[in-house]
Length: 121
Image 1 (cartoon, rainbow, N blue to C red):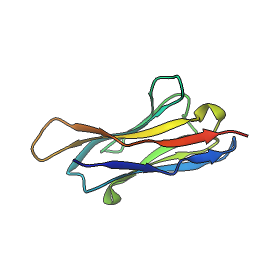
Image 2: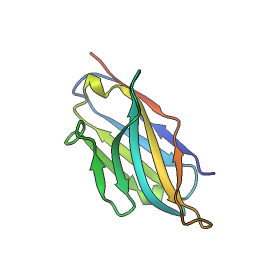
Image 3: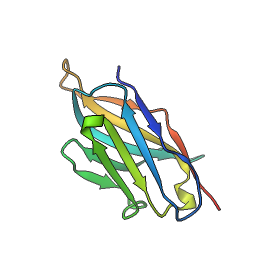
Image 4: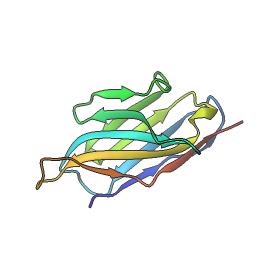
């Protein structure tokens, strides 16, 4: 099964930027939708941003105008550029990748292990 590994998290001050990456361990036969989610302590996991294979993007209201999701199909990698970070952005960020395999017409969904983002002065 394909594995997905996030990287790029860390500790930053308010107003600074980070770029998260999520790389697949092997080539994806056909992607359906890729997304970033986050989970803060004591809270439910929430959708941050998503992008379809066709490039259509969607963002949570709380990050619109500050975060940008993108993908590099050749590298089997998605990114989350996070600008103007706020303390309330502190969370573990997870990527989710929905993709087709040659043997199924129903997308398989897989999660990365998460990367910690902390925003504090």
